[in-house]
Image: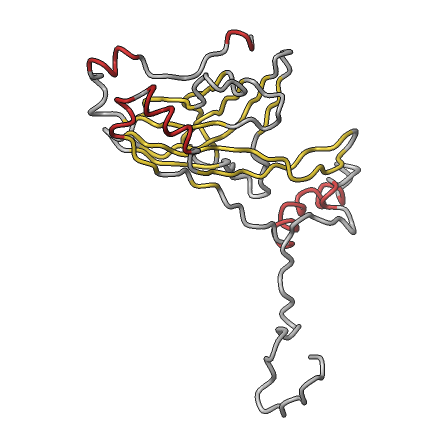
Length: 251
């Protein structure tokens, strides 16, 4: 239940006495922002790459997002390696849950929101993870919100508050912001390759309708169309031996 949620923290006794895993594991610190103002609890899934997919390892949570006194930084001990943010969940006081996951890729390879690496003995401040709505895309019965993923340094007041509340961790903490995943735009060739099996089945009468992206005239938002091999490049490029065109004439 939302009311029972707590912020992910490392046991105080372990910090005071020295954890037996500190020599074999690292500590990641992540500040999590509210995707919408009504969020009071937010959590992110951390996973490791497993072929073309991810294998979830743990979940980090921050409760009391709108409270000036509650810690907004999640803490976790992790084995050395690279970790990916594979999902985000927001819960409101009324128990409403909003789940945000990365978009599926035509290649079939799953992508994450962001990633970071950690080594044994490190205390890494992986930054302030934020999700901001940028547009609503009308699909089916209702809009699907597109999200921008941002990673920034903690605000100064958060740094000072963490220093006062968690002096043992702050003493060895080093900032190394997680890297936001940059997914290249889809090309027309990728769409054509993905649609080929569907078109073949339709031609054989095994399916009746093509997926929306495979239908004639379909437009892919943000798609990068390949350059036509027969079309010359725009600019000042001219065939060898051609006379220069006078200035002011559009190429």
